Figure 1 (cartoon, helix red, strand yellow):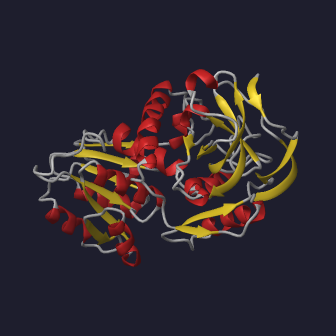
Figure 2 (cartoon, one colour):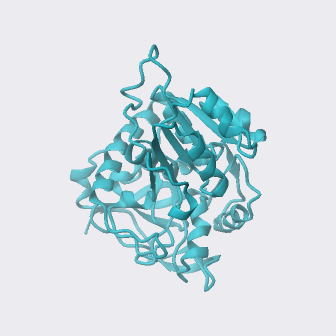
Length: 366
């Protein structure tokens, strides 16, 4: 039962999947009920992520509420939240992300007037941060944490950074002009690493602004050679934010002869990867942070991972400090038309492949 709550309606408007998994607006969706360790948030704004259209395309769940990133004000808290997050209260402006388009929980998603969120993974929005900026950080923060410190296992963090006087420690970020890429670049710089980025030439200045020391054209067939030269063939870590045949081949070609770690943000089957035993591959699924089973298929199904959830909770605390200190910022924003219709159109726009170097965000309420 909730410890405290404001007046909450029984139904809401939300962007849901139609029978083909595409976004449509529904004005009679039930407001999600609280569960243990959760808060209910009245949504102010959302950001659109690739997963918001990929879930409907690959795992259609008619009627499921779409959406991951959100920002809004808490209107209700489960009674257990008092022990977990004594700093949270009714009316607090918070942001984070949820598992939208979830086949096992179709009644909860980011693109609704109300969203249920995990209290331990919900950020308090700093006073200096605009709500549209806050809407754009949830997915990218947890993706960055899982990539850099859970799978790549980088030894240094923003609070235990590389010694400035030591030999440079390189990390390749392939597809660095994505929203995940620019968040990763900031965290690498804060941790003292030398970030090497690949992206389209039109986004070179963008990734340099976010922390890349070297930038190369992802489409240039000489890029792998150039990266090996810059790193003196000693690159140990590569993060692939794209995961296609070109990106996989380039990342493997740049990793040192002695080996290293390679992480992808998408499932990367063995037949896509060159046979190099010295390279340890893993891929991250940001939904693991909730510590719940992921009821998908075709290789995306996952058992519950309490270990990943505990990891994410530890990093939430670090990220909250960095946000409060103004040390992290979101990807450059492209503002959509207001309202849930604008968010639904944003999902279609992102799916079209015409968005580059921008994060789509939009207000759904004033």
